Image 1 (cartoon, helix red, strand yellow):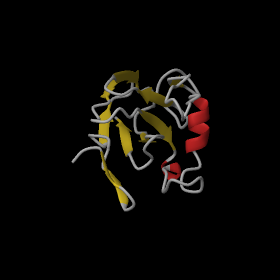
Image 2 (cartoon, one colour):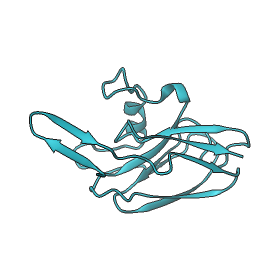
Image 3 (cartoon, rainbow, N blue to C red):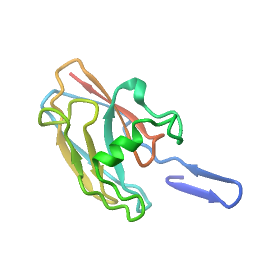
Image 4 (cartoon, helix red, strand yellow):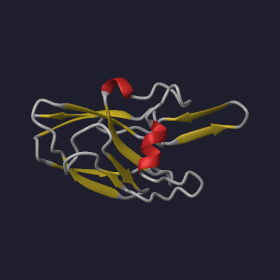
Length: 137
């Protein structure tokens, strides 16, 4: 099963995930990511420090979710995103706070500019259980 399974009054199961969860790239490489989900859900690929990876849905479990959604000017009612790319430092994907919006059934490309030896933790703000890591070699 991929996607969401809804049992009214009982439970919700959602096994959406990043595949592959860990990728290794060279500094300066361009990475392409596709949203192949079977639902019409958007995703984000948002960099955070490893200790900031969400542990739950409430504000205590995901203190970075609100600020990242605000930075992308996401409208939670319509799903529209005003800022699809948040780049907080130098150009490129390289530090916590950088975030890319991935529309349903579409793809994005970005350049990883973090220096060699860095490990970049990321997650999806929309689905905070979706975690991954980019290892820069």
